[in-house]
Every structure is written in C-alpha cells, then in structure tokens.
Length: 230
Image (tube, rainbow, N blue to C red; front, side, top):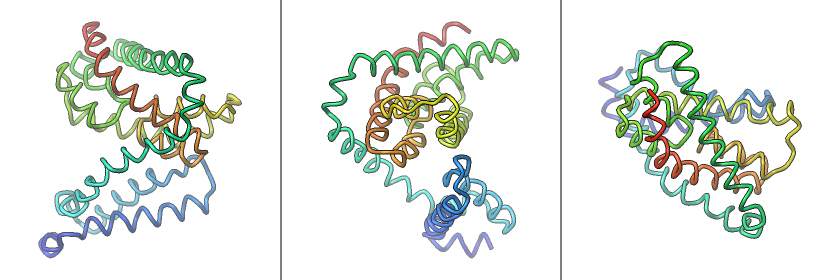
C-alpha cells in the first residue's frame, strides 16, 4: 500500500483535512473541553496509519503541503489584534507583566521538574522553549544545546494539552476576564492555544495571538540565560 500511495502526491493532504473535518464534528457532538479537534485528529491519524500499515513518510509527502498555510494563518492573527488596539493600549502594562511572568514561570517549572526527576542538561535545554511556536522553539533549542526533535514533541504536547484544558481551568478558577483568558492561552499553549482562544471570543483570540508573539520573542532572548542553570 505504501508504494501505491507514494505515487499519490496529495493523499496525505486530503486525508489530514478529512480527519480534521471529522474531528470537528466529533468534538461538536461530545461538547467537552477535553474533546479538542486537534487532539482527536492526532489520535485518529495515528490509529489509522497504524492499522493500514502506512508509514509516516508516505503520509507526510502530501500532508507537508499543509505547512504552506502556517505563515498566512499566523499573519492573519494580526486582524483580531488590530481590531482590539484600544484594549491593548488600555492594558499594556498588565499584558507585558503577564507575558513576562508566564515565560519566567515556564523556565522555573522546567528547571524544578528536571532537578526533581534527575534529568540531564540536554533534556532540560530541549524542554525550556516548549511553550512557544515550533519555529522559534527549534531555533532556541539548537542554540542552547537541546535536541530539536524532543523540543518539537514537547511543543506539540504542550499545545494540545493546554488547549484541551483551557476552558476547564477557566471554569475551575472562575477566570472570566477575556484579556486574562487570551493571555494565558497564548502564553502557555502558543498557536494551538490561540485556536481555542479564538473560539472563545474575538478579544480572547486577539490577546492570545499577542501573547504568543511576545512570549516567542522573550523566550528567544531570555531562555538562553536560563539554560545556564543546568
């Protein structure tokens, strides 16, 4: 089957789109914050490829075309931010402090956990940039001596986990301010968290997109300093 599908350039592309469409329908039926479409898509794809005996390289030949949409999709996040310029100016100080604290909290948590479980410096350096977008995380990881493949895995898991529990956490801690919700999603779960924030509302999506961008910049600047602790 791999040889047959290898000749179909767009097999992975259409399979990925179909599975994601099906996942959104399943998520809508379940109506649970844990039933995240991206998480369901990941699980279904893994199961399907395993059952059918299709290797990842064959699937990725077509699925890799989806990466072409990442740049325009990211740039499109500027639209909700532009619409909320007045709100950004009003809460500028709080936004800056919030994002800085989020980046610092991520570094401290990773350091404590690595020390607690006796992990070596290489793993510590690989996990430090886990809460920012993949493109930035890979560059930071390589710069400080981490393993890029491990960094990518941690970024994906962080995004999926964060976006899946975002609504639940907000309910438990009674977080209702849209600015706070958006900042927390973008700062902790990067682009995947931003998709969840956009579903919550326009203000949440704008703040999440802003947090994702600023957190990425701060991570690239500050995380190499934190790498020196191990």
